[in-house]
Length: 159
Image (cartoon, rainbow, N blue to C red; front, side, top):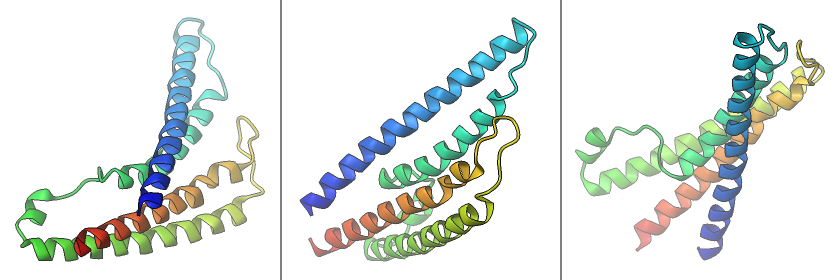
């Protein structure tokens, strides 16, 4: 159990650091674009596309991290109306459904990378498989975090 908690802490730190870098890069690029457009009257052709791709990566990677922190949107009022035993069962059902969804996202994300891997972006000529990889990697993070949530919930029930 301690090894899993240690792994989760390391994964949290890595994902949080990487997504923070992505967010900072996105803000800097958009800021440069605004300054270039309104101060120098010269728009950058690549900034919008790069910012969009960074946002895609940020969203898919953050989804797993947010799941691991139990910060997703949740209807506490409805959930807390149920008895404690039913709450635990509903949490596990929710975790299992999320795991199934995560596996589907991962699978179809891999298919998207395979099918669209030869495409090139219009402004920066970036291979689109680099953008599409956000889906299977984000899906894999969701699989890992949802599996850990299932395990942690089972551990809580045993105690």
